[in-house]
Image (cartoon, rainbow, N blue to C red; front, side, top):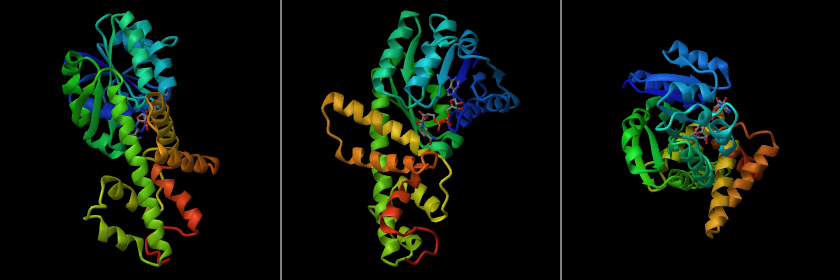
Length: 300
Ligand code: NAD
């Protein structure tokens, strides 16, 4: 508990994750380019950090929760970045969802400075980040993972080491493929129900306990029925994950016919200015194709 944890990236996910570490009694120093959220964390008991370098100078362990690969490279390798301030022996836990190859590249640069890194992306979205029940999938040296596992389990209900550095992000890409295709299947099916003149809420209640039931169905159908597309997980971030999945798949020789299609549906929504919506908003693509909306009490 005496160790200082630096936390960089206090967005939809990072903010509640950092708050859970504070609640667990850890000493936290926090930084984000959005200063309002830094203030909020300081009011909750964290120390204020002023740059990624400053965070590194004050911390033993550094957690990053940033949008994508370029942000992680910038924060760790860039000017005033983590590696400019970190002492040898510092541990970086990158919990962002990024390209596995970038995790490897950043970890290699960190190693030159005696800094070790694990990648530990998460699944579960904002609600599980708030509850501290995320699923955490990690990659990196086992002895480092063992040192930080207790910290991870303050943010998640499971933390599994799946392999070497980059493996956590491979697991996360697998997760994101399954989630995207589930949302697409939910969308196609619920649009069918609504256009066929059957109340989609009743269809949802009738099928959710059977084989079609899923975490995605229970998380997204109620939002769709209420016309609530507030993120959550933004479509633009899911496009990023599917692009990373396609790049990684093509590098190792895996065709991704369904993922590439769903990625293009998301691109179409981006053109319509809807990339900031929750990824459950993928249903709006299907709704437009069929000329119907899946909302509460909609009979068709
Ligand atoms: P977000 O955009 O809400 O948060 C990112 C934060 O990083 C922002 O507060 C931003 O100001 C900050 N930031 C960006 N560049 C920075 C820099 N150079 N220095 C300091 N701070 C910087 O994103 P999020 O939804 O919290 O997602 C974070 C990561 O977690 C992404 O990789 C995402 O794919 C993944 N993820 C998100 C969810 C979800 O449901 N939102 C679920 C699982 C995983």
